[in-house]
Image 1 (cartoon, one colour):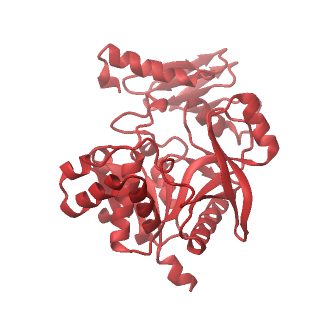
Image 2 (image 1 turned 45 degrees about the horizontal axis):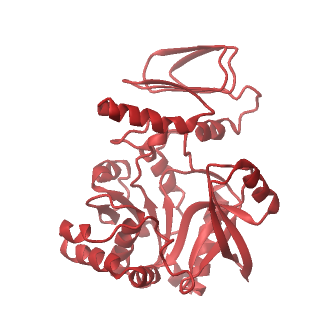
Length: 361
């Protein structure tokens, strides 16, 4: 029976984002999921490798946009080209979910789908894999529900979303009902969440039966499924454009009829949402108090601490007496920023647009 279940388990790596908060390395034409921030592999390649042994290789799909499809095919030659589901025009996550779910359900009406972002870093991969298996098992027992993996927080973080667990739905694998979501709380509030043990980070890892999601979307707004299905059948982009855009892939669903469940997990995770979080990730395993991390061809330093230096070119980078500084050097940009002000990147991006310097984006 287990083997029969496994053949209906699918994973979809969602890879349509632009990752502007990691500018200037992450660009419109080569966003962060296609970059090598941590090791020798791109983030999207690491994500796909993480799925090994959990779902059959032929059941791994990639969801992306027309803009990135060719690049992704080059980065992931082992993924069947038919398994790369391409939005002809970026319309947001709801339409992307409807599109890849419709494609998969058309092939396998019994499909159970797990979705994950293409640009996250995970340590403790076996724990992550078990969380995936627990999610599949839960949905196979409760096909009318939608499950989310909740990650046990190890620190207060004001840049992440939280899920509050409620009652235990089942004990094996452990699953809770969901009481509420909180997006980016203040530090004092986030600290209380961590101490309570009732809140989990929301990584937006979902698991659901494909037919259930389409049914939930159809009930919430029939135009979504109608026009996405029409596009899948016709290939006419005009059909795709008629599907109404929604602000969030789950929030507009009737939660009373399609209740959410939280699958708890405890692995090291980062959404690498900005330069500060990348610096924290890269220095977490270092056995020193300086928290200096350098990924540069040639870098010399005197008396600096709490800094990140990344360089993709051949220039020598010399740093002296710096603290809380991030330096990123590419072929055409040198960025120097206070590591404690990662949100200011948005203002830089806007200034480039205002000054018509879009070639640097």
